[in-house]
Image 1: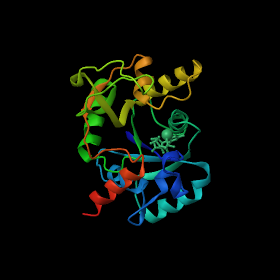
Image 2: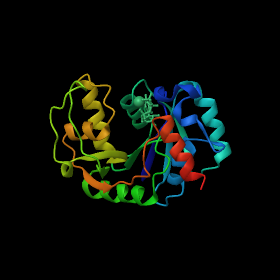
Image 3: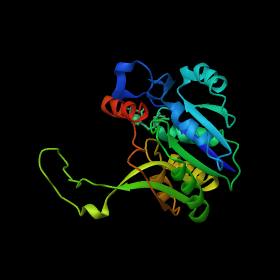
Image 4: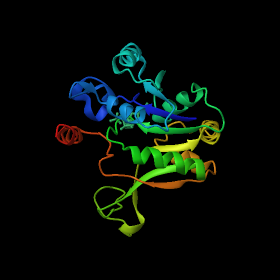
Length: 228
Ligand code: CTP
Ligand code: MG
């Protein structure tokens, strides 16, 4: 079974002027989280969807279940203080079997494509883990203090991570438990935990449109794309 975990339990502290967590911001009459949910719903290979939300939004999310009518969206889980905690809570409540594939996706990336989802599933099945990433078109500059330049690495070796990141359930669950045991609870990236645990990861080509809505500028750009 292929299970999508859509993370929307963050506060959206970089977009506070909306007075609502980022996933719930109104985008052309729908909450931001609707767009990723819809794409996962429409992907034949996805069997079920778990939406992770802040505690106070349980009733709102339950209304969405009725309103959207997405047959695979059967479960809502209350997330934690950090993204890592939210993912672990979703895994713990997922009722997944060891061999299931879990796709972990940020609700804040509304324009994920069917191709990215499908290739995540096939890569995770083959390799155990799948990373969605794009090459950087800009050169990365390393500056520890933000004032002077320490290092300019070769651009060709640098990529940007997107989501979903996808894994065999048993392994990503063990990776999260191991991180907790080591006292790590605020890693924003599942791939890092999975690698530290020793998991193998295959690469899926990301897309520029699969950007993360982080600031007002991103939201304005999203509106421009989907309003076309
Ligand atoms: N997320 C989550 N639980 C948390 C923190 C983040 O489920 N405790 C989710 C967010 O809802 C988002 C994704 O992880 O879909 C990526 O995080 P980010 O873009 O940082 O979103 P926020 O944490 O909501 O935003 P900010 O960092 O500006 O507060
Ligand atoms: Mg955050």
